[in-house]
Amino acid sequence: MSELSDQMLIQSVVASKSHNAFASLVKRYQSGLRYSLRQITGGDEMLADDIAQETFIKAFKSIAMFNGQSKFSSWLYRIAYNLFISHHRVARNRELPYGDDQPEHRVTTSEETDLHRDLARAMLKLPPQQRMALHLHLHKQLTHQEICTIMELPLGTAKTAINRGKKLLQEELSIWKSGAIS
Image 1 (cartoon, rainbow, N blue to C red):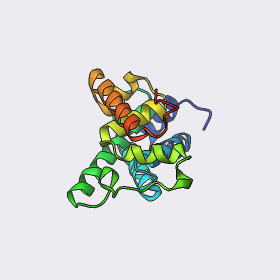
Image 2 (cartoon, rainbow, N blue to C red; image 1 turned 60 degrees about the vertical axis):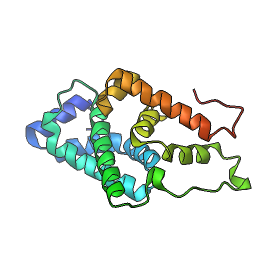
Image 3 (cartoon, rainbow, N blue to C red; image 1 turned 90 degrees about the vertical axis):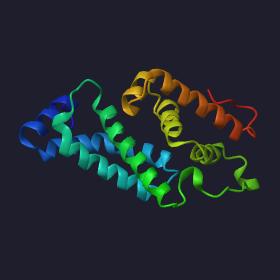
């Protein structure tokens, strides 16, 4: 079933609740989704996996509501983003350390050369909306319009989140003078 288009698989799931067709969709998208969730949760693999699992459960239950106006992957990312935001609100309300509430990390000499690690830490300091918008823009290389669809934001708001996020990252990563974030 993996050679079938997303639309054909979706139709099979809707028409006959085909678990095989949905398993093909999961197989097609789970790796990328889990990677994105790991990035926006600061490398918390258990949380990323939990959100990914919840995303696919919700997608299966509501797949008949997918209207095809956006890509299936955008629809999945929208579900995942909503779950991430919900988790972030719950964690913040319980005053659990998470994201930008985490204690300041001291950079050691051996870590000063690891831009990827420093970038991941800097991303955690961003508000969730900026973090997600930047991840989708920089890591997934999605268009502004695709980001608007996933995050249900007006175009101007998405662009502002990306630009403000970039500015904050540039400030956080000022020790890396040779490479500006573009």
